[in-house]
Length: 255
Image 1 (cartoon, rainbow, N blue to C red):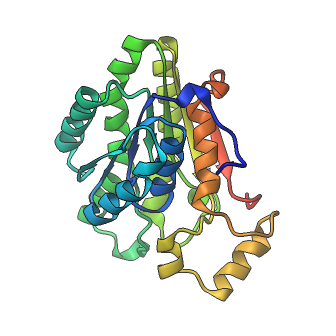
Image 2 (tube, one colour):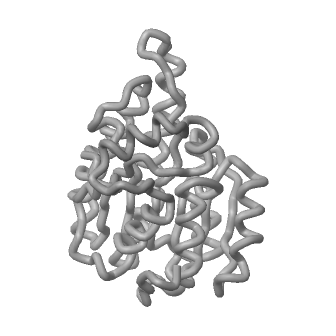
């Protein structure tokens, strides 16, 4: 990471990341910690998260704070954010990263499955934003970064409910940007393409899939979680203080 930008405005800034235990989220935790931010992250995967903290703690002035939290439990989410505010200070950056792209067939979706997928991929983003907004208003600034996906723009198959949730995140971003902008709070959205996380490698990466992705992208290389994290750092830092209400695609030129 030493070849890339350092953002002085992120030093000591309180940053909250949902779904920070693995994949893009773990890269976000590591990158913000390397900027000497005060990082807190929520995840349901306890061992992965504890291991991540132990690995990166020596790299930062501030040891990341991990709280186990099921984000589908909104009361637990609100309680965790209250604890973070008490222990570290008011979050000035929120990265709504958590989500799950489990494959599912249109014909098999039940109302119960629909509700669960919306809870995993959309609902917590709204309520996490709501929970940090008052503290950000009190400080007169803040950056909320919502993670969507290009999946709904393609659109990807066997992901109908996921695609709908990710499309809704773009609409939510635009709405909240107008709601919160007068208080100095910026709200942006990031739409990754095919990002080569450990989960993607384990479940779906094949030579055929790799060739398909590289054939569709302008850039003929696979994208990594670090590529997404560096974009999010910029959107969190004061360098982007005039940028809000925008959707930032990072997909190697797929769309």
